[in-house]
Image (cartoon, rainbow, N blue to C red; front, side, top):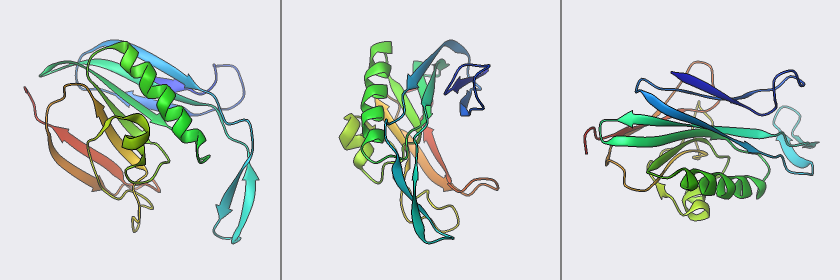
Length: 178
């Protein structure tokens, strides 16, 4: 089963979003819309060795209530803003919304926050530590897996190189049936 959380509604301007695919049965879906920062932010352009001011874009997160071996589990994914500080605001808003859904939850995605910041900002457990960006020679972790509530233990973590991304995939295995 799969679902997509779009940043704008169909029929509007061109847009992108996030998707979630599950091999496990899905009992429910939930989408959280996250507004953009209201100001432009400087972004470094490596080829030009300069900064440009870019507007932020609306973001979305999608969550699925999956029937896992250990019982129901919310799994959510997102791609937060590149604007420093605003991504932390989005993360706090998103984690509050996910907690309201009830039950244990795993949040995955490009949070655009380095290292241990997502755990400190959200109060959620960091499930994996691995450098993910840039893909060719990762120097920092901006892609994360966070957990809330009673979760199975993590059994493996991998930062996997993909053919089409400037990030590495963060792969986290949870123990089945705990």
